[in-house]
Length: 445
Length: 187
Ligand SMILES: [Fe+2]
Ligand SMILES: [Fe+2]
Image 1: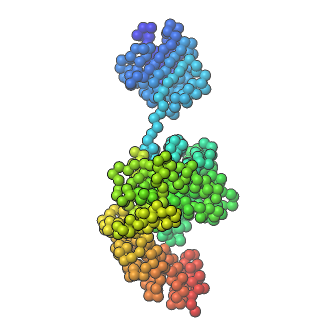
Image 2: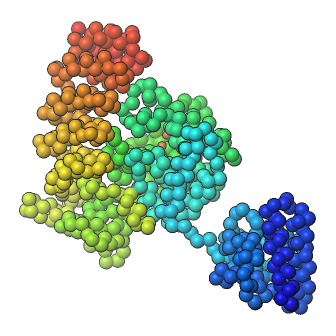
Image 3: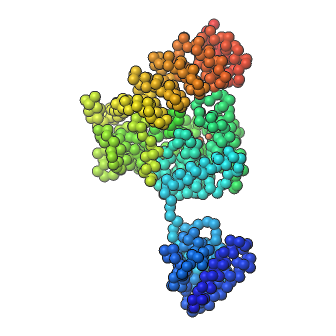
């Protein structure tokens, strides 16, 4: 194969990709260079059997020879390979025009693919003489995802305040990402749900309820789709509060009857907002509409029908996050006490079965509980132990004399040799002027 | 203090589970008390959240020093801090703080006034009727509703005329409160 041929192939591929940005599928400006690339490639493959197009440390290698100035000459091609995190494409003898145009389609698709998904996609398109090797998408740091989720809620609420219809894509994507992380490390995600914001309560609250809802859905072994709609509905459950004045929202607990009537409209307003968002499921709107309807049908608004089966998951998660947050009218409840309150309200406000599942999921000493050990050391629960509920993993923050440790360390109370330490009671982070959210932020970072 | 602490720490390993948890609770309260100077400093010069944390941290304790700290916080420049302090004083229910809470009825923020009235419900005293009746003239409905509630529950006959007025003229909530009050009031 001559240098010219190699250049021609790359140029044709690049031209086809470039045209795909500008013209509809099947347009001659796309089809012609694709066909040309295929002809040249086929001729060459008859000689060589197989050819590789590689992206090695940001430079292009074609047919075992590095390509000079690839970024300038074949900008579209390199950009697409990079965007899809593709390390190598191999073409084998007999490759058809359909296969090549299938490859171009995949390269120009909006979405990203995990390596195994790429394989599936090739198979689905019956492309057998082209293989692609890609790098797995790097999992983003949990804290990044958490903060992004807060940003998404902020954007959604700002859109509503500005009279715009919020975009659904951002919401569903971030819920998927949070779901992956909850499945990967539930404890760490529940720890992040201890991040609260006093002045911008609503944004963090929405994200926390979503995390707790997803975690509970997972614990209850619900299907992927059900968990997804719980996550979405939870993230948007209070979006209707954008319709209530800031002044009122920030001073709950001390409302006049008229102000209270306004706050009570937020589930209805919220479901109306979400109904207008593109592709939002009816179930999501219904769960938002019903999130303050109690198990015994007290609460608001009044409904005749039965409550959505997944709705109670959001109500319980909502209450748990609200109870564990410092508000002007409320000192934050310790997680243990919040669970007790939920249990007291089971059968009236909440579905007992859901409260029961929540209690088992969150653990006897939930992540974020400050505890005192029999050694008089004080620490925070960072990982629940579902087998031995009173022996979680804790991070010791204060020694037995009450001095704050410079280098806190973790202890698995259930682990061998740790039988010498046991939890005696709950301690109060307020006493130590401690911000639990900041602690978990550091743990994740 | 050290001896107290030693005994309590030893009791953390007692054979009796209830003794152990009582010791943990006592140590916790002791530590809050030991940190009182730090809380006083926070209420003096901390940021908003630190002030709120300090207020809620000491609210479980009793005694003059705690009351003084909370009373001080009822004069804080930040509305939320004043409200939280008043709420805590109401919960503690020690009548020594009555003058300070009554003073807060003059607060510039209606939200703080609402909380002050709620706190007074727990500190009820005959002499409160006058100042609370004044509150019925407030433009803020939240203030009027709370004042009606507290006055109504006192059953004091001197409020009869006011209750008759609100039973007819108030908004729905005010009417409900006034009507209930007329039923329980002394004759
Ligand atoms: Fe809500
Ligand atoms: Fe909520």
